[in-house]
Length: 226
Image 1: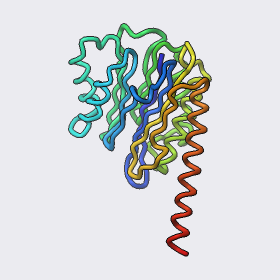
Image 2: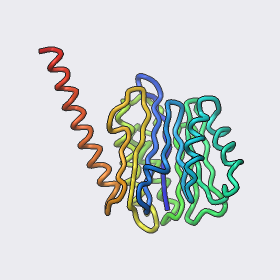
Image 3: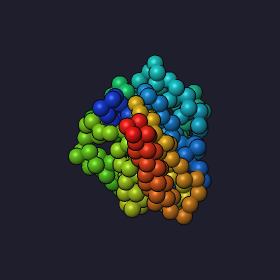
Image 4: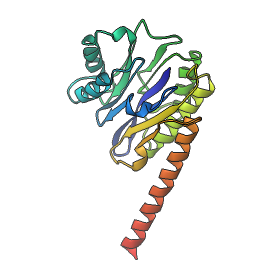
């Protein structure tokens, strides 16, 4: 009952990583997305948070395909899991267990540094539309240099496109975006834990947080130069 994207993008100051996720259950942001300066991981479908937590920790030493396949090998219920991610080495990985609820599946775009996965979806177009919307925002190449903050609205747009294509077959209750970039901002970690329209609310929260951040930055500049 979840769909998500894991993405890698080059910024002027180095790589940034992000996860966008939406589902028909409360507080998905507390369970599915994991990011570090080495990559991004999402765990879903009968969530095992250890897969995400341990998987992203291992990216300091291992490629994402080795890290995630390794943690899955130790999970006796992996047939019920979905797990996917990207890393700083340019590697990608996606796994969908054979017992995940349909529609279920994943998309891997190695060259662009994007993975997506979903279960209990209305259809497979959800993932395709979400990925294409994310990539279209960068003219088809998410690894072109972009400002850090650009990942957040692009991920929200991707979630909205996935929802509009069908999304979670039961509806949507919560959504989240988590980004790790060379320069951290408050709106790199946003969650809507329970809402009738969580993706729209996530966009509103992002816009409010961005505006507040811009106001603080301008105020700080004025104090320096006054």
